[in-house]
Image 1 (tube, rainbow, N blue to C red):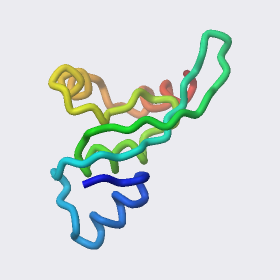
Image 2 (spheres, helix red, strand yellow):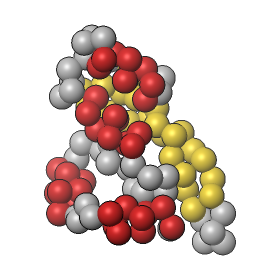
Image 3 (cartoon, rainbow, N blue to C red):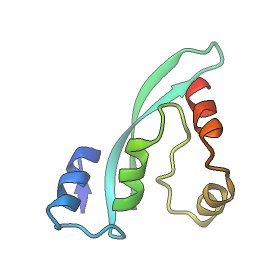
Length: 93
């Protein structure tokens, strides 16, 4: 399955056309912060799962993406703390 954005993923999941663990390709809008502190929007296409795509939508802007399905990313994501202060820290960066 391929989706143009996370809204399409959400619609497919809500209409039960896609399972939460289904693999898919999706374009996700991200924010890059350069050395001068300027924010730049970019769109990246990921091979991921429906659940990870939905998760990327609720994370604060500026947090690293969780859409990669590689094992090293999964370990890093699970090992990280999910406290409210950490989420607030992502938004400040």
